[in-house]
Image (tube, rainbow, N blue to C red; front, side):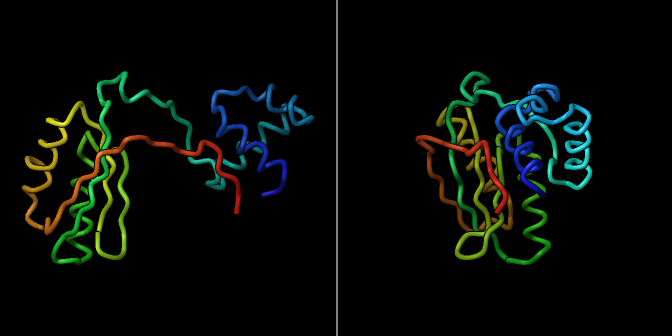
Length: 150
């Protein structure tokens, strides 16, 4: 990736709906060059997709939590099965598979504390591989929108 590619990635991370013409003008390049660079970034896997962000409170999921999970036995089969289960849960926003004391950190967004309680007790603890679960309510969440190359 050169400086032009980095600039295009940064601009698209800031606003994925920004037009090709606008980006080309801001960078002082031809729109055709801009379009070709973006196509190349998508084909090479640098740009993996575009999405819309929704306000969690506005869609009825105003409470977020991080759930630390330990499973037993810590085998590939158990980890993959539990991860597949988590991926099907509508409350799950993101899943981190870890080393160390916990096997997973699960970020969820739910309606309220009753909903969170139900997720933990009625869904997670029903799994036979679950050995331990700890839940922390999230007071605030920040995600960087622009991540530059290393």
